[in-house]
Length: 171
Image (tube, rainbow, N blue to C red):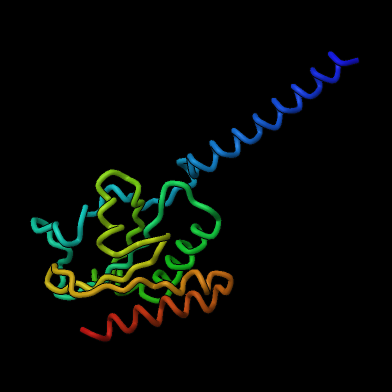
């Protein structure tokens, strides 16, 4: 009877360990390529303060909306990105089309993007608005209420739109 109980316990431990390993691996790898958004973080300037050759903007005044995230992304992090994108697409389509506003999701864990953590004093996944004039960063603001408003889509989108309108108004 003891060998049978030992084998049963060993198999149960193996199954639990295998399932745990699969869940952890899936969480660390992030979404499949087909689920990823079409905007690649590799195409953006490494630093808004350093890109002197291209400059940040073709227009005298531009607002850049960053969503800073890591490689591992929980449902809440994806929701913040989705709601922010929706607020920009629905409220500022003309500004984006005319080059007055840009949307840039950035993985701060990718090589070359780590400096954003220090530049914008990031401590978690964040939406940051950056005001640029003539290619130079003038000011920035971390929209910290995104975490508070995460479970109210309408309030979240209103908050993003209101903050962006303030930045655009201060030309």
